[in-house]
Length: 486
Ligand code: NDP
Image: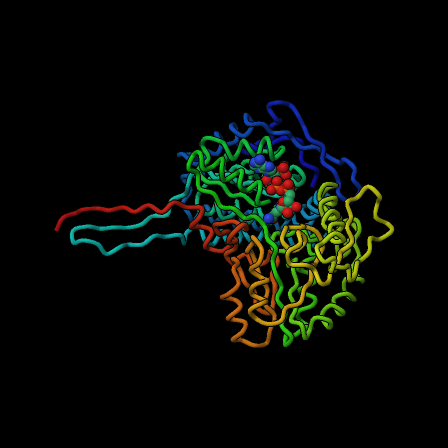
């Protein structure tokens, strides 16, 4: 697949930015510019929204029967699979993902379209018993035009989950990808057009968040917004939407705990715990970034994890190691600032227990951070409260179940939690007591599970994507009351 042109994708065509400006695209593996994208403005966003409106308000897209929509989504799923290697190579270069990760992302993207293909003709309402002489029914209707602000950590996966669900419910979509991760989505939109998606169903405007992103959040003609990213930007998006009473789904990341009891099956738990923080170099909203271990097993668990962390290798995406680089220089600086902050923690109890390595082949200009295991982390420290979004696992001991729950719930976030124990009753108690959108018992699925409703509580956001549940968020429930007399 060739690198897409520095243009937006609107009405099934590539078009240059109205302002004629572009933004350079940097390869995170070496820090060099290798492409460019269009720098979108409010005018470009308005143009994309107008195209989507035409598609949604009587255009070919809105006239498709649900079964036909489903067939198109299924065709797109197959086409993504057919172009998997090309899409993965593009995603790997653009985001610095090892090829294994990029391939998994492409497969998940295809799976979203496959899942939602089957759901298009199954979103039905109810009839409601009411007063004699009345017939009442509920209908699920599309919002119309949905806006999707997509981050840079999993562009293909989040496009599949968000746009896949919105299309299945019958909406036309306007997408603003992160300026650091647009290329695969432009390629995908072109594939969708070639597979027969009508003009205006899928539109992509690239550019900076504070320009094109903000413009999309404020755009007239958008009926629903789906945002994934930081809590602070999510707040801005929700504020802009509130001024026009536009509903929003917010997925704002987390500080997800892995809770390990002394009776846990460590052979099963440890590789999953490592993967949950190392996957995508820790740049995962549902990364298992806090490790809470029962005191009796604490030293044993940390010693075994230290061995695993020391063996991890970070390097260029093309080398397909355990980790690639982080997305950009500022993200690397952010992660390093958290690590430097450890030294000045209250009590100065935290220390780096183990660190992986950056391979010597890694170009000096790349944005590499070696994975780090921090022991005895202070639960009150920024490292344990804020989203680091890097390969840093903060471990701390707990004495009993009550303390485990208090620590798990002791941050502003609540996205995912993992509970590791062979005691079924305790697993259930924990699953109920932990405040988060998802809880895994004896497993952990950072980002996984297309079928599983996903979203947060507290600062992790609201609304649900993934699974069938997402279709309700991408629809409007209408109640129709018909009086026919008796
Ligand atoms: P942001 O939340 O700023 O970016 C997420 C998306 O929002 C991107 O598409 C971005 O575009 C867009 N955006 C930025 N500003 C605005 C705006 N004013 N209006 C509308 N859209 C906007 O995250 P950052 O990239 O700054 O990353 C900082 C931190 O956020 C990370 O370290 C991590 O903790 C968290 N994050 C969480 C993610 C998650 O999956 N939950 C994903 C990404 C980040 P652009 O990139 O072009 O600016």
